[in-house]
Image (cartoon, rainbow, N blue to C red; front, side, top):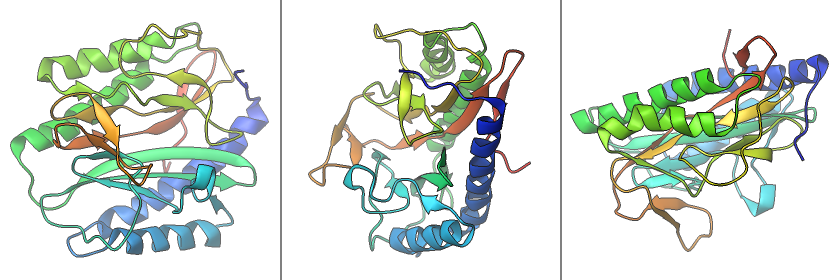
Length: 249
């Protein structure tokens, strides 16, 4: 069941999203060679709690940390630990905040020091696919418009579009209906309508699209061990526009 939000409720979700965007703005310069993913996680939890929020991921279905930090071939759901970030890494950071019962979700992928030209292209294309996906979401359109928009950006580069995982509704909880696939799908294709709040999140691989889950039952990795990128915004659908909520301004 898709849960629509009224103007006041979207306003509360926007507050959560702006806090999350501020957290990402602050954590960006911290993702450098030598820092551990556990140190980043501890900082993020402290930031969120001091601002009056709760880490939305911590404890959700048993996930043990505040951030999902996925490095290189790790696509999503990486568990922070004592692993140190190294030059040349692609570091994906995914986080959500529960601010007085209203939920936000956002992700970015950061290069650490110099990376290859192809890896820079992966980052640029994945960000562009997110922008295109957001533009494709409009009142009266359909969920499959997102997959079409992502595919049009990514296919010329022959990167893999992850299809086992996708975007989703968000706002009253971490994950809601509808699912928002990034790759063409034969699944449900509901219309976008005013009042929807969605987490839109292309996950793009340098190589094949296929992924698998590691023995920790959380970390998703590429089957060919090639690097991956992940960008995500939370957006609200209005009758006349689609608003990106996870912005600092």
